[in-house]
Image 1 (tube, rainbow, N blue to C red):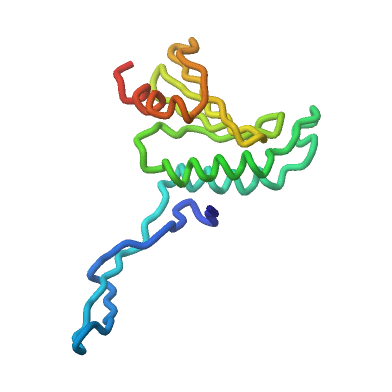
Image 2 (image 1 turned 135 degrees about the vertical axis):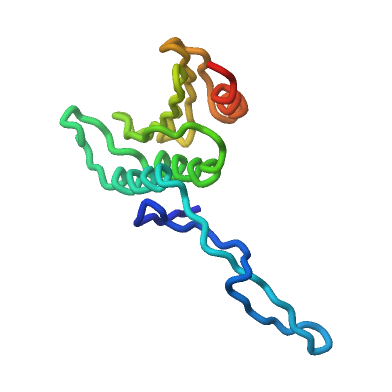
Length: 156
């Protein structure tokens, strides 16, 4: 899966609307209409994260002057896929950053709760949930995705 983003409100797909109409032939010479809507857009904060991922893909070795490794293509691809597949979920997307070992970190934050999701160069991931700066859960996304969502849906 690939997402190309050049503007904060980049398009990502098409749906239906009565504003554009095309006729298609059907049986017995009749026609059918299909309607297309305006293009949908990523929320601005998600589009900005795509732009940052694109910039991270150009980091070189020692990008922080302390021997940091650039984010791996696998880390960037996994982070991009997560954003594409989950941007519509009510998660408090907050921040995206490179790690020093080739990972990409995506942070969520809401009031006294925070979560860090690390996309590792191996293709694996790590999830850490925090409440009042105390670790509430450590694990991976596959086993704890529902817990991530519920964590931010519950009251502080």
